[in-house]
Image 1: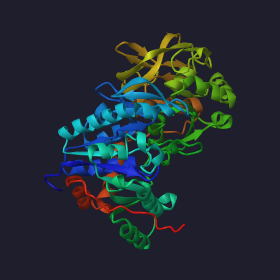
Image 2: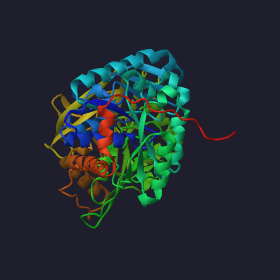
Image 3: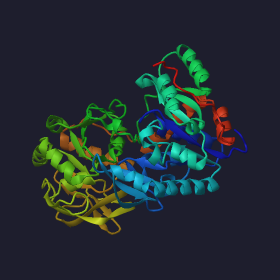
Image 4: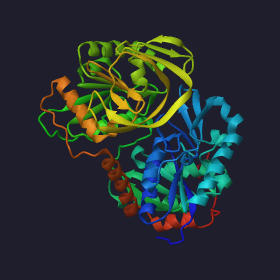
Length: 513
């Protein structure tokens, strides 16, 4: 460890899902284990997977995980700008943890000066509080069509005078071309900030890759800092939408402790939010969680989860169009288990009044719950606590809430007891809650799964009393950190962080047209 390590670095990626979030988390964990005061930072995130911090705001889920890697509490300072897509061309704008209206795709040029100032000022404050700040880029810095409005990649590097390390996903193929091409398309001033490359998700014999790495270093004048192997066990708190694609099994299913498996179908809504809620179920031995979008899968599963949504009314219409709504109602009538979370909970009610998110006014819900929801302009952002009621009575539970919809009326039995009264709904074998993270409470989750197994007729399912979701999350952070310790030149990375930004050579394409 460099005793006087002090500075910041930007971890950029050649593509989305190249591994920026995980490499950032891993570097944060390594530095924290070495005794460095370190914080994560993502100037601008675009994700519907978010988390409510103790200081009362909303940030990207990846930054909450990275804060845990650093050993610090998640804070709105770590992700000052969050865009939550509600459609292909319109996103809710969250600044310093709180919604500030919406942005259309063409609005960024108008708002770029303000957003850049927000990002630069937030990072500057963090750098006075921590020895090292590990920043994560967004998408790719090679998106030169967006350079004029860039806040999170080379725009941030320019504003804060940051060195940049570019991560490439070799599992996609073409990583050497990605490295060279990313560098070559940048303006000379931006090129000079690129300090090195990291190969991520490598499988095979490193000796076969070495000649290519040597050549790319020779062509660019930048070192390849390491080749991080493909880590098949990484899946908790995945932020990219690719992690919740239709047909994908969540996590790595483990053999059941009893004789029966439980199958869980998670509905892959077009605007799914906090898709990570189902990950705690997937941690349990004997539970298989799969993302689905067809009525047949809903009919066949032991439990169906309708997760949160950034566009509740729109996603409800999508479910009706695909026949999913009818399949859910039929399940509920037959007494087969369904769990609705946040937006999914609202869809299962009798009526939704939404003049805020969709502007649709009164919308008929699926009518499974005796529940009316009304959307308010201000968003509920809260860390919540209580105890189980219908499930795991008296067991302490915690979660967090992010929603515009309020319960206006309910005739259902409550799922939870809280200091303010009650929360959620239970009607027959259908359960609903506004709380995210509820299933991360181990004792509650085990009781819930026991109830589901009984309702599904899986008498041979036995929950594992030793499963701890928080321990699983920490184990994955340590897995990343161990890989980085073993395969990344941390001394070289520390020199990049600690030293002044280098003026590195520029490159041009060697193609002859």
